[in-house]
Length: 316
Ligand code: MEV
Image 1 (cartoon, helix red, strand yellow):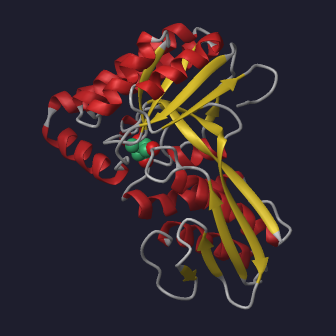
Image 2 (tube, protein in one colour; image 1 turned 60 degrees about the horizontal axis):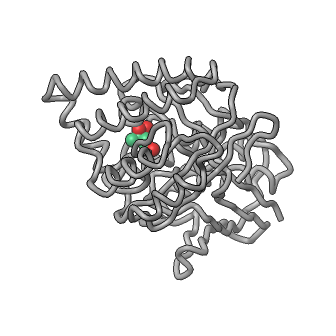
């Protein structure tokens, strides 16, 4: 048996803009994990504890919830076959990353599947291959993918990411608190990407907002590397306003961000595709509790606080 995992992700700056070639900053969020277990079998299949009624067989057409993960697994099998490994596998998925939250559930699931399939053959999947396969699977989940989510869930550290380029790791210079709060509605990444696509085609203002979002990512990467996190938080506030101007925020997300700022967060914004899903707040470690409480009291259905420390990679 081979067990593999991949974490959730959180985008600090640059969602949507990244689809148009602008930079973004994102990082893994290890408090939430997708897991895949692979066992040798007669016939390759995929099951998920989240959809217990469904079994996807890889030699049949697969639609619905398991289609992206099946696509990832097919990509892994093709790559393994080229290496001479052809053992059929039965995979079981378990995940505590909420689906439709903008936290990279589909990317993490795809990555865990590919890693588990390679692991079952006694191999380690090369990172660039994992990202490429997961990006193709993401296109099924969301209609289009810049590759940011797969890159962030494969990363060991925060990254600066530009579409079609290798992610560049950023160094954490100061400890920080991150709070993720789930709003009342699911994120709709596919429709939100399509909506922003429409607007950027027809509205100069939308194109300008995307350019500015990319500029915030560049400034944010510099501030991150200098440990100037209060200033980085200010950029997140501005990014939220730009994302709202593109129509991807909701009143619930605005309320969560406001509550986080009022509780002392350095900054807060929606994270991921928007249209629902999650808000993320950046705050000093000592304010992790009040910011978490404030976002909970402002209507979040779930709140996940995390500490990003200097010595160790990350802790809850
Ligand atoms: C989704 O997590 C991020 C988007 O920018 C889409 C993408 O980059 O593929 C909205």
